[in-house]
Length: 330
Length: 131
Ligand code: HEM
Image 1 (cartoon, rainbow over the protein chains, first blue to last red):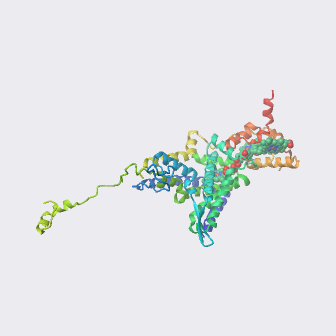
Image 2: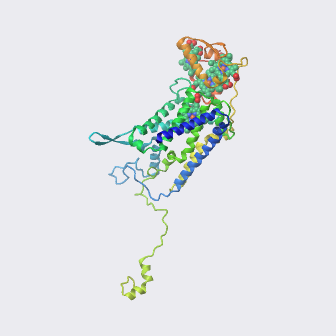
Image 3: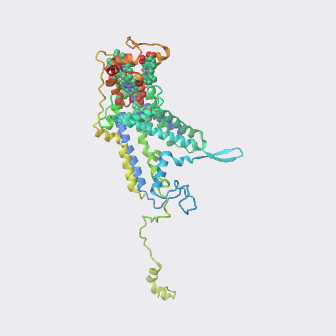
């Protein structure tokens, strides 16, 4: 059910944006008000969530990673998985963020005839997640050409590398193919694998469909139903220089793209997508396992009000004595 | 967490990077003014309606190329009935110049220099270079 409701929701948003792009009055809303709202909600919401995480107490070190802690010299220490220093943590975190190392360990349980349970490797999730995220990053950097004038060198260079195959005009960009393929793979994985499908929620599908909608509308705009990029750049530069304009002659498809992007940004802080910030705050990734080297005192320890036996005995000294009970101190 | 300083520093760094277009726009005093293109002095109409040319001139060029190279068809009848020779150098560049027109707009839009210029030339530029 949640598959269809999320798909329909994205399609409805896209249709509304398309219809609004044709009419005059709602273009100001979609081209100015919605994007500004989206940027504010995105930056504010993400900061709020990160600061909330920063406030939550982590009194103890959490060394539970799947590698051997540094110990006696004849025990093989897994230095990357279980680092003891800040530098090691930095390396582990960098590899996690850039290469998704822990996803690489992903495995799959299968029932074979017998019935036999088999655990096998499953690398395609890791591969497609990596392909998707890297394409997304490259696409976002390439999009700077709309928002920055004059266009920086590295953006041009990246675009040239991306169009390496020099197929057609406008040039086919490799990341466009990769991001669509990766998203479609991730979607079919949720739908085809019964276990994954069982645990998939509305938010899982909604994020996928939203991203697919954005990528599809972008690809349509680039290769099939061209829009006037000069006008698009006027809109984008108007937004970042706080002198917003929505010139006539921007195609309605652009508003579909922009509206879906704005919705994604608004949805971001409230959904699982904040893992973008959360990954940096994962205790099993960002804490050095130095509990054998350094003493960690719980910083939240406060002086507890206690009533010791000695004090108690003193208080009731006379009564105890009168009852003839033994005393520790006379 | 104990590392609040690090977290806040990381967050601020992220915010600084992600708002790059905003502060760059302010710093460079960027405006949303499109570039001024050098238009042909002696002509009023392009080979296709202006709205089509603005968005899809590269598609037209590829259609022309395929037509010439694959089908040996070199005549193009435009929307207003004029007949053109399908040629990048011979037709487009007769009315337009590379530097003040194609390049200026491409720089603004971040297209770079299309690789077509590796082989095709703007005759005006070629003549200047000739000794
Ligand atoms: C999450 C953010 C975004 C994603 C994932 C995204 C994705 C894409 C993709 C995959 C394409 C296909 C062509 C290409 O790769 O260059 C595209 C094209 C395009 N996008 Fe986006 N986009 C995003 C945000 C934006 C924003 C904020 C704008 C507003 C200016 C925008 C405007 C455009 C335009 C005008 C094109 C057509 C480019 C062309 O014709 O060459 N996009 N987008």
